[in-house]
Image (cartoon, rainbow, N blue to C red; front, side):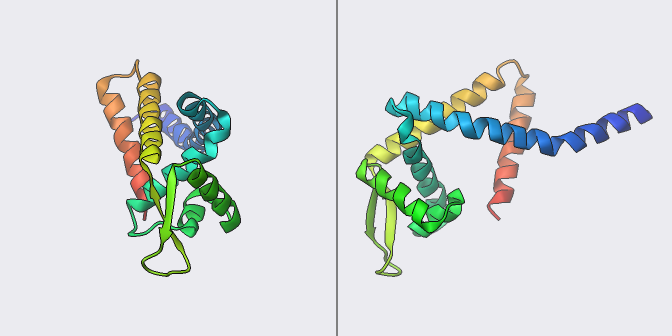
Length: 157
């Protein structure tokens, strides 16, 4: 293999980390705001979507989701997660029940409205992926999707 390809490959690998974080910064500011506006009509409901996504994701990995679970999933302190859960509960997206493991804690579940909000959020995310990769070959789209899922699965460990 020519040396220029090795240098090109090395340069690509060296820039992969910064590129990943540029994408994360770009989408972390945009997807949730656009999704909240499109699904609820108001940007102020961003936290509801984050709470619903956290409860759903954590619920797939554990028997019971608590405020502490949401705090961990979103990288928040307990009081911030508690306010977020309180607001999403008041909006009708989550319901609190007494924990089956510790009566001092609340167990969180999605309501029907929460499941609808989650489904809308996931539909928007799929649509965005389709738009961003629309001019890619099917093989490239599939490969990239596989790599994204692989990366996500590594985060779950």
